[in-house]
Image (cartoon, rainbow, N blue to C red; front, side, top):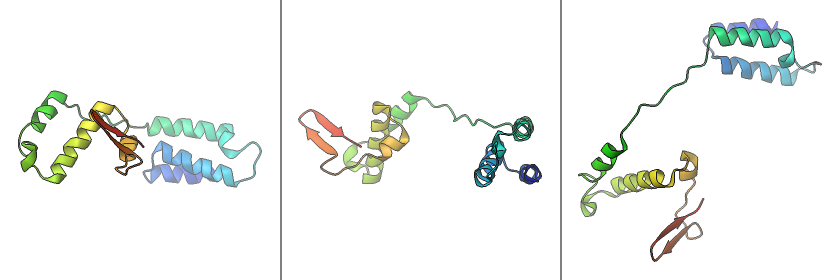
Length: 128
């Protein structure tokens, strides 16, 4: 019965990972020993789903850092006194991201409040 439901999900267009999440959720709710997700039928079904609908890895487009840095030295980013605050902010965030080699979530967590933003004579410290 559950495998029929999962099969319907697959035919409706859901991916392998989505079908697997549904199986895990159902398995967590049903008090079976062994759990439904651990049974051989479920494992074989998921193996078949993986063959029918393999995950697609999207590869981001390549880009040339030198081209990006060159563009940041031209209008509308330069001269800085004529650039808008929005463009200066974008440029700053990009340069911080490139120089710090941090993940997007870590950069997003940066805060410009006194406890997390410290100005030194020779630079600035940003904390998350």
